[in-house]
Length: 598
Image (cartoon, rainbow, N blue to C red):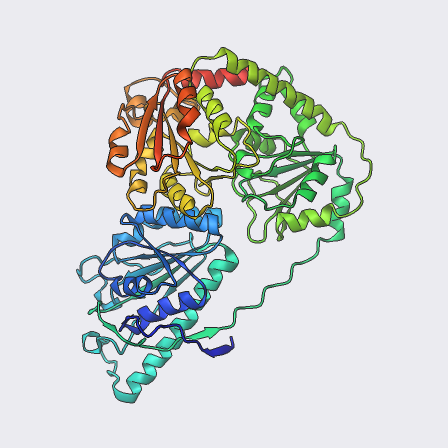
């Protein structure tokens, strides 16, 4: 790496921490353009707090609960595409980041986790707020580095290993300079890794007391380093183009993706090819009249048909192309594992999961680049009954779904239908996990509404915190749709100063974990209601009163219709709508829906 020389990154009227390592971390974040910084209070991280908060270059957010802070930062990075720095104190605070770190790892969202630590000689000796922090995130991290403690700060407190001469004078300065260079290199590596791999990275930062000292000038000069040159994008091999063109039945299955990831030109080419079925999900953010959303609505009646073997054989593709993140639909996973394609390709620059146990080729390119190579040639007049046949099946399913909606009473199913139709254009939609994202999959979303969900680990924690962070960074208003348990589990997501007045929350309150009623093995009884469904009747109004949200509650189809009529109107305050649905009826209506489609 070649140095471009020292870069002046401080202003005369600023105060700087007097700890070289802390200043180096802050300075290199600035040099590398890391602007978003989410800080949780503490003492061991005081030098980092002073450095970040004292420089107007950084946009700093204060979030007390580290678990919530991690997901809030994830939401910021989800929408900005840039790494967000997380800053916490030592001890269990570090562990509270772990759920968000794991989600970021599997969702490919860059985070820069900066954990303050005690010096090594204070670990495991009974000192407070001290745990083993080096490598604490295990395999769920893209890069991990343990920085070296300064030798010129609080030198008299340093406990040297027995038999090691204590350096002083010029030798001390030389050793400090060596550590400074190693730390700078490690910090720059971590930040570059966050950007290139799109993964969370971790730097553990040992700091000795005193921690609050400041001075007029930076304690060390930090130099900018040229970034590594980007690797050239490889061309799509001709053999792939040939295989693609020869396959008579092609299925494209798209997991979670950011909006506008693929140019419309290539989507139109896919849609025009009768040999191609494009299966999308609500979180795919891909739309075309010839694509197939609501995968479960198509596959469920096939499972119940009189000749499911022959029907699934007719659906089985010769070539399966997958891209995007995690797929929600369990039914399509079961289908492809039972009826695997002749070939399975996955397009992603970094990673490929063998979800269907038949992965044959990992194409290390973005989906847009791959499709541009596969579809760049002149589109010939292809003849195939593959897509036309399944389009007919899909249309019949849609008709049956509409008639079913007219016949059923108020329930989760009907409430989601009403909500999806009422979301205004341009609203960013954040879906919580569990039953929320699965119900949402059964309905089409407008192309004007980008949709996100924490599908990396698919946990219920962090949904509200992520939505609040994403809403802060997104230009248009945001709607969070959540279940009652997931919302209450992340109630601290509302405990911050960053709730925009146009932020809206709809909570489907079915008095417990309704998803357990539709899972195999559901059996009524006290143990089920207590330990699985966790039945409760808590109102969400006290939470809204505590955090300054406008609250309303409905319990009927007409009530929901009336509430949605003005729920999205500007009001000067964030607002929450609690939608009460019948706990013991929801699962029957959903399961009967799949029977009705047959």
